[in-house]
Amino acid sequence: EIFEYIRNINDPEHPLTLEALNVVNVDNITVDDANNTVIVKFTPTIPHCSMATLIGLCIRIKLLRSLANRFKITVLIYPGSHQSELAINKQLNDKERVAAAIENNHLYEVVNKC
Image 1 (tube, rainbow, N blue to C red):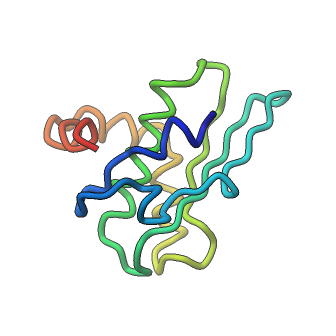
Image 2: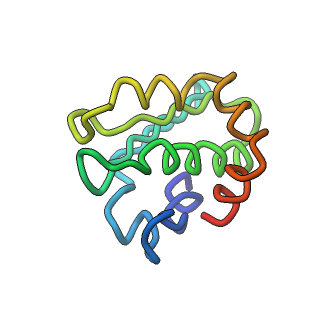
């Protein structure tokens, strides 16, 4: 079900979906219904992808809009697939940074297009 929500998100740089680019796949999604957690690991198209944070933000926002509030959503870069993995993971899972990103009108429009 989680994969169905995110598979058709469009890549911000390419006219393809995250599924078509192998950025997301069902094997890298973990749902723990008993503990109300969802973990999505995604693989940027290249190790220095400048859009990795934006892609992760698109995934997070899509899930925040689609899932019940009881779920804690964690979005991570697949280990070893990006040179700034730790910094991006920290940004994507910081509620204040995500809220600030959503308040940016331009960024909000870009996320909605994805």
